[in-house]
Length: 426
Image 1 (cartoon, rainbow, N blue to C red):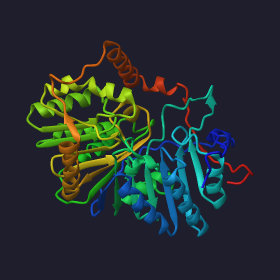
Image 2 (image 1 turned 90 degrees about the vertical axis):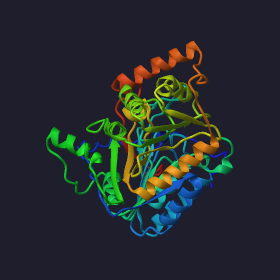
Image 3 (image 1 turned 180 degrees about the horizontal axis):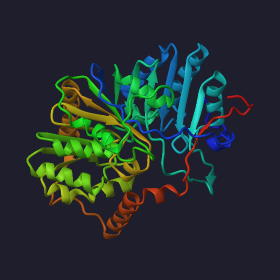
Image 4 (image 1 turned 60 degrees about the horizontal axis):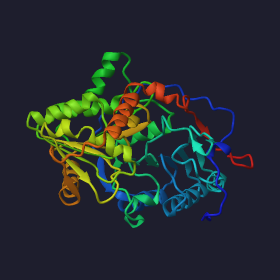
């Protein structure tokens, strides 16, 4: 356990090897696989015990990616589990974001490295005048793969603020456990090496693959990995949302922490409601970032007048990134519907065609919206002050239309760097 007095340092101070050569960008579109078992895990109360149980049983390999890892009761337990697994010979690779994990102590990281855990830091950067500068293009994914047979993917970080006993600021969030053929794709994606799945050579073939989520499939347990990067797949997750909302016939339910999508998705959501689809949005009523609430509320009038029902969750901060369409399609992952997730961050979601899973997710979101949210209306929807609206408008256009420019401020060439043990060993 690390004491509060333990010296803190940024990961840049300990991750200072010569720049590693980045892997070549690859254009991979993962396909649908059937015969998967999927289980929804709500909040840290369900997620942490299950993940820790699987990690303790690991026999050969653990791959873990997370945006945030804190030195609290959750992070310390994870550290101990990984150390014990490494000591019994399990190969472990942990990838951490340099912004979200930028305040981990040298001692915390060194203990993992000394035990044999391979640590990678995405875009580490020093503090400048006490301020972190690596704001853009974050490794925002939350993925765990154990022994190539069980995978977890969603929005839950390894921090105690995902547990109810954290208090009023505890986050409401979701993840999913996957077992079955799709785990091989998630494993390959996290590993970034090994044999590639079949990929399309020509643009029209890739376009056909990206539209595959609309294919009619009568079998449950279908799961597909979809991701966004800043190379060949900058808009895949957004395109999925556009296509499924456009095809919706009965209902669309979206629960998203940071809702500030582009014009096309807003238009498809509005059009779905206009043609008679029941459209519900569950958004933040008590966000951890004020600008997130301001940005979302800029869209309220446009959507409410079309018949979209908007709920604000007010019990605690909403951190989930989930959605469902009709009775069989769902998605769970790390991607918000805002400019950072849709244009800058590295994200990953799973798409799920499974009626039982869809029903489970719908029932949980229905209970959330019915008992823990307030319904917004056109006459009561807050407009905000003129100055706030102006700032929100400018932020929207800057981040939406100039993501490449924004990426240069200041972290224009993110790197995945290995953590180097202070004594010289990994």
